[in-house]
Image: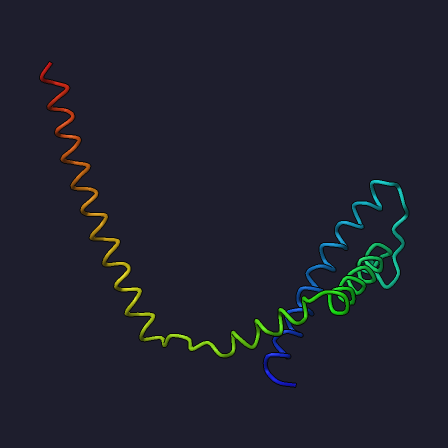
Length: 128
């Protein structure tokens, strides 16, 4: 399996786990709202609502892999990410210093304008 497919598979597995957690909390609150008994299956943490969430998350993953273009899109995106030439740490440091310098200069200029216009406004308002 090449790197792009591994990255796409990791994306789908991670998104399925996140979806399962969200579904688990949602089903637990729905069970409580409608008064369903949430039986403990494999200890206190794995209940009927958790099993329902696992099944629905698996069904969601199956749907996205079989009936949508999501797999192709994520796979193409993964291939594109692997082709990107990322900047070096030295480039990042240089650009960060440049950004801070420009922001500081612009901040000083705006501060100077603020002082000048405040003085001008005070002068014009006090002369009446």
